[in-house]
Image (cartoon, rainbow, N blue to C red; front, side):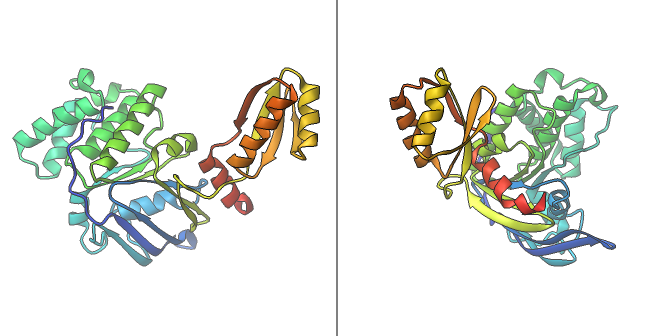
Length: 312
């Protein structure tokens, strides 16, 4: 997926305040609030059943909240769904397509659904096919596409009408490693051009690399919102291996570090990166000959695990 994108005319982004949605006696979303800003990638993370997909369906005008407010570029999806659909690119976790149509025909059909002039839809189709690297498959029937290829078609479909806001539910599902890297670069470029990007994923390591901020939800509620850059230090477990294990353990004990055995390695609990850097200096001076020293979880993973500890 290339980063060659057309600059967007950014609006007010996504604002969700105190939203609730129930299905009979089952409350899917209890109280979620979040802001996704133009020019940023906002990650929506949480365990299964946290309410992420229900929230995205409300953003995509497919459900109406029981309580609370939602605006996208200042427009309420419940009161003006047509205008919101014009502004958003929606990519659900699982989506159907017209299997008998070719990839190119699918996009032409989507263009017609958005009332795009025929010549514009055809031109734009070729642009987005190049963006998601589907040019070679443009004349292939949709039914023969792999899971990853269908995901790329879903992204092309979401981008076709040049939306100001992208709402993506598990967009990396089924993608190979190269396609995931290309997706990350594409979303960063879209954000840089002024697009509002809200993306939900269980692959937190990838979100760490692409997101500007993260909203953690659990039990249908917003638990925490944090920026990725400049976030408060998060306690993490670091895994350490060394050629001289005896000296390693002795050095950890002398430093007063809390550690536990992890097979050939040792796990150490540290309050933040400054503590990790200080400990590494001491271990290097100890003669233990450290061969590996890295956190078990990224900062976003650690923050997520800490925020949802009581909701396991």
